[in-house]
Length: 243
Length: 243
Image (cartoon, rainbow over all chains, first blue to last red; front, side, top):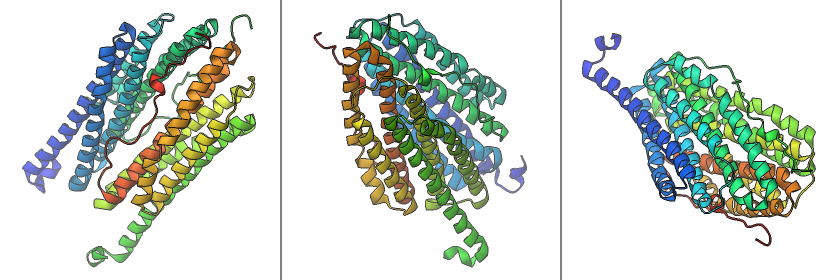
């Protein structure tokens, strides 16, 4: 390593250790965020209010990890004056930690709603939610793997694959509106389910953003501004039956 | 300035200029984000689809500004090796630019929904939306002023004032569910309005986060983890009339 001629070896080694530790911290946070998404979805589907309450409680750990990662990054920036790829990794780690904290918030919000839903009459099938949750978890896992292995190609795959999440979301959106129109007693439950679907869709967006950040950290260039996007629900109109 | 004894004066001056330019860029982005929120709300209330379409178009400018600010910050980190308050300002500027980009996304999404709503029968009063939009704009403006003037006290005021936004949101949520239950023909419009209200609530959260970041950039310490929070809609249950 070029730096070793001017910098004592132990300093370089400890800098490398710092960067490895940073990756580990972010990877650990990513693992916890994945688990929160998985458990919030399981809690919803099984009507398991205890598991949902645990997701709500556990969210504080993600907040703590974000603060810890940010403080560590600021310390690295001040003490190590990193350049090029190291600098991009550190800036990227802060962005990813923030995205994971957001993902945690969406999972916590979904879990809170799952608690209410467990008391409401069931409506329709939750298959769409399960498929959507599985997809966003895969994307999140893919993005985190890309980070851990400095793998921009893996990151690009995740970045390009968010479209099917949006398609499932659009289907759920229309189905829930139809349930609402059929019977007003479905409205409270369907509204909470709408927001849960939106939360999962936002989690998918964040997984895509993480992939984008990993690409930037590894390659130093940015992806095109527009990624494939198929969420058309903001323009959706669903009519009541017989209207 | 102590640095001038070892650093050529023009370098120091140009560093100061860089930091001033950074603040200006973020302030300009903040101004545009405020305008997007204001125009999206006006478009909703006046059923002005042209203005709504303009909000959707203009959002690309916020995305561009975020990229520009981040690239500038990375360059400053690499070239200036900033310490202490300067370092916190630079890290904070990246976080604030990201929050402003998110605010822009919420405003764009609200504008898209305003276009659909202009074709739907009007339901209820939109006063709550106007009050909520005014409050989040005030908070956003306050947070940006605090940044421009290095004013941690102003930032703390904004941080503490988000509660009434949440209260209006809870009221809107219940009102809209009631409209849905009264007449299924309201469901499409009410659903879009629910999401717009949620968007405004999220914009308020981001304004609070910006205030928190300004506090940290100026003072170097962080605010307590829990801020006053009154959004209880995730646990809301509304019953159909006569149920």
